[in-house]
Length: 324
Image (cartoon, rainbow, N blue to C red; front, side):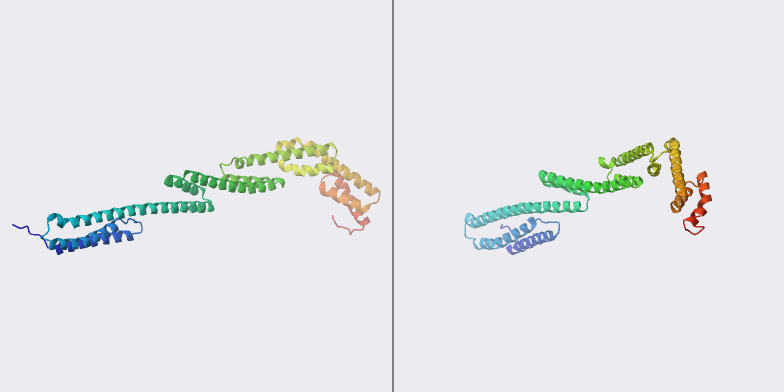
């Protein structure tokens, strides 16, 4: 009994629908943003080619009932061999294309990493830039370039730190020269909070204190020198500068010397006043009297000078009561 089969046209339609479905899936997958695999699309194309080739083969088989089985299948084998060669060629081309795209994307990704690192350096985000350099070595294997980028990042970071530190150090020098020690310390503390790991910055408060102590030591030396040469005015001026630096114990230890200096100052003014008064240099005597009463108001000499001030003003030609 002869075996019953489906008509050739039905098989052809089923194969065509299948090929079109595979092609449609391939087009849909390729349209996705994160999908770049052409394999499904290539399979759909191959199925369509096979269907197109199978139809005339089927028709030929149907028409050649008289031929032998070998003669009937010989063209099919040849056509299938050709399709196998074509399929292999397409597969090799697809693989080559994927490799080429991989190389191209690799270079693009590396360039994107370079740009990203420079952007992070521009924003002074050094940790993010170093992390990108690590990614360049880990993902792409470019160790030498990653090392070069890390060096560039660290060099720029250190240059910026040095610049900022130098600017603050210059400001601190300005404060120390003008004896604004508290301002200098505040600048140093602010810089320490910004760069806590910088050794130069950590040493700034100690350096400021050393400068302050050195300045105090110099003032003390100048004070002793002025006292030794009986430079009364110079001694008093230095004492005014030295006063903020003295501890209570130091000030108490200098009291006797200070009293001697001011006593000598008062005696000098009294002698100058007496000489001018005797020489009838009324204007000079008046100025000296005003200085004595202003600087030593509680002294006996100031009381004696006040008794003569009215006479001095009259003789100096000044209106009575001025400066009283």
